[in-house]
Length: 509
Ligand code: ATP
Image (cartoon, rainbow, N blue to C red; front, side, top):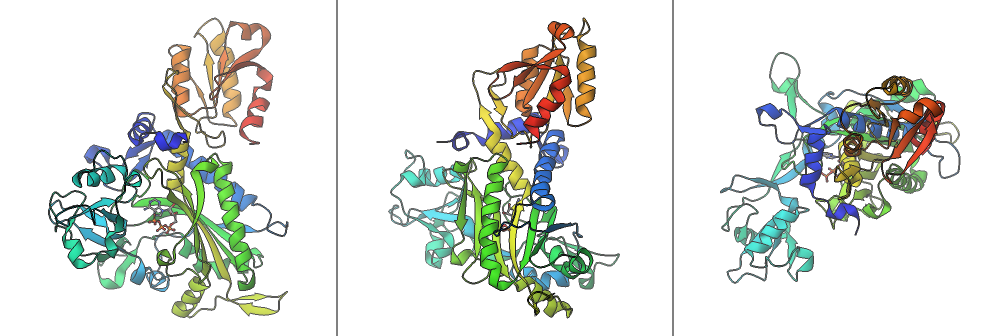
């Protein structure tokens, strides 16, 4: 089993709090469910992930299936758009989750994430509901069923079925995850996930607007603008990174499902005849990318959506592949990190219909006018940051810090640290000179306080890959000792070579 399966989320959450990666939003007021703030190290980590995606997908994307360079351009569109956009996109009508309330505990659940056990197990015919991908809730349902000795549903010979598939009579016999008796759960009701607001001084229906639930629509709206200004030719992509908002029924699992989050999306416009080829290309590219930034292949997998999961825009017969990651709270299962969807020409067609503006493209080589088909790799930047944090978290009882964050050097918030061994005898001056040189290129920290062991421990928790120490020998031989985070090996590097040495290790990997 890999490390990720066994790490305790509370340990990761506590490290993230202690070391300034992630804080609850409005913490001094008791927080706000589903909202999070990124601290100094979390901001650097998230920005590094964002920048790696932008570099690898927009500035220098991989060559296409025919070995020729492809073209992707960037965009930064408004969070609030004309409300008609969301009618055209299908979100006003279809962006709903089925919601179930518990009348007794006042908890609220997503019906499609409620699963039940005990259909045959309980003498009184009671059924026990638990939350999908939540080991604690599963264990508690098993306990209520009287099978607490077994650890997971997977170990058990118990029947599991979705709450959505139960008859009304069976639902009335269901004990909710936070209830003691049966019959407290309501029937599922549709709940629209878009946050509403009003534009201008008057709070009337005419002024109602929405915070975007995805960044994608801003791209479709600007399709003509980009074609007219950028000399791009289909096939090409438009990429955007930005905030999205969803009034999730049950935000949970830390930043995995929050109400405000960031997405990194590409809409790849192509001819219908070539769309399957591009769909395969993007599935492969995106899976490889997550591995390239440090998620191990065991923890990443591709999963095709079942027919009943397909979104309203998914093209018949092609559908959606998810890139999934094995999060500690989903293990041994996986959770979605990114969806790669074949959207057909749904969005451009709907915006043509609703706006009555032409959004078709004239292809001079084919001498044909058509509405491009779209392949959409849509990744979560916030969820990706969580995957990176989970993957990096490495317990090590033999270290002073007991745990270190094994970030890929490209993503590490602090790239290097510089320490004078003692804060005297000319060492601080040499160390400061090295620090001043390195900080012009990277985020580097200087630390002269406490013992060297404590300083290493702090950097291990922050995931800093290299620590340079200036000792008494440095004054004679003009070199520093570099200590490697993962192996804890040490070697000497000449002071005038440190910059090159570092750039080879953190930039060309
Ligand atoms: P889910 O099934 O988990 O609700 P989804 O299929 O609705 O997700 P998409 O609409 O495909 O998600 O969004 C693309 C990506 O945006 C997801 O793969 C995920 O990384 C991210 N994402 C979506 N909703 C949230 C959220 N509430 N919090 C954090 N990230 C999210």
